[in-house]
Length: 382
Ligand code: NAD
Ligand code: DAU
Image 1 (cartoon, rainbow, N blue to C red):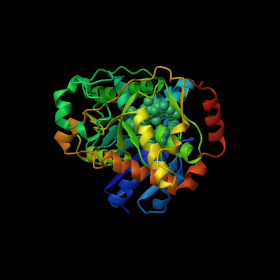
Image 2: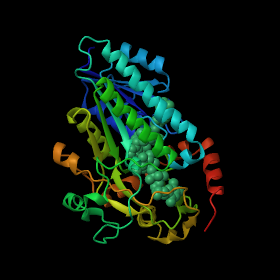
Image 3: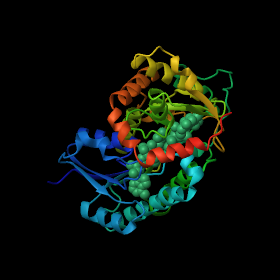
Image 4: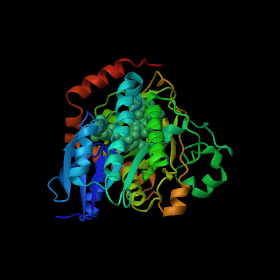
């Protein structure tokens, strides 16, 4: 069968990628969706069990650094769209092993860009109707000051309206904010973003870049704050809070990110950058308390009884104080906004992890336990 489009989604077996693959496979039966993933520790085909075997879906195990193989795949599958999510994504791992981040995030992205350029330039219509959409992070912008000009303290949750962001724009990350990455992870993402834009500016490759804030929701690997803590609370293990727990992150429900990716892939303007965020800033310690209360309530413990698991540990090296995205441009130009209030999103998320203990047990068996035990052992209690 001839499909209307042939789209490669890289990193589709990971957390955000699996939501994007599911959305595209379900919403666009007229598209062929090729999920290209190396299946590192973070990739898991169990994340996509519900769409396995669908006629418009194909999984290909491949390393994005394998230029030859990817170039061949572009030709064989007549790929006209790439949504690039594959990456090493965990800041703590990047501090221990920066080389892997440079390899995958920088060289891997470059390899995809070069293969797309060669294949698309070989076609009579060249770049017409093509898209290279690169998914990046707000971490490339660096860190913001802890308080807002008018002194409001997080959590703002629903208080942070788009008008508020417009009034205090300089206190949020805008699309025009200068890059200032601090961790090896964000440095590698920044570098890959620069390569993507350079391929547009030099060769005319039809690229789009988006920078998103912290995602939460089902299928996130439990090395990241929210799923790690849900699992630890359930098993009454210590909750390692870095530093004083005062760092601020802006949380977005993962399905809202996937919806934004769909919209931008179809309607975003070539060469543009769009910020995607939740208008939902929280200090880590406040979000941790919400998670503890929610887990306790949902498993029938007394709400808050697990607060004693909170354990303050050595801070993350170079720990960015605050991230806060201004996504007014996306709202204004393409009409996107987050659909879920945080309270609703966190309830759904905690419930999903509690209901999917088998998924959690599978991903936390074997090597994971060794990684986590070594990680935790290296943290000094404060
Ligand atoms: P993840 O770690 O859950 O998944 C990454 C996926 O990429 C995995 O399936 C893994 O197997 C695959 N992968 C890794 N190296 C590969 C390689 N060399 N070749 C092919 N596949 C490879 O990551 P995530 O949290 O879903 O993030 C996805 C993307 O979104 C990343 O680019 C990340 O920088 C970006 N992002 C993440 C967040 C967040 O909060 N998680 C926020 C903003 C942007
Ligand atoms: O902002 C977008 C980024 O969000 C993405 O680009 C990254 O891929 C994603 O991992 C995430 O990065 P963070 O470093 O913000 O996420 P993480 O879940 O690792 O940590 C969230 C906050 O919680 C951060 O301030 C560090 C803190 N933390 C984290 C862990 C794992 C703790 O205090 N204790 C922990 O055990």
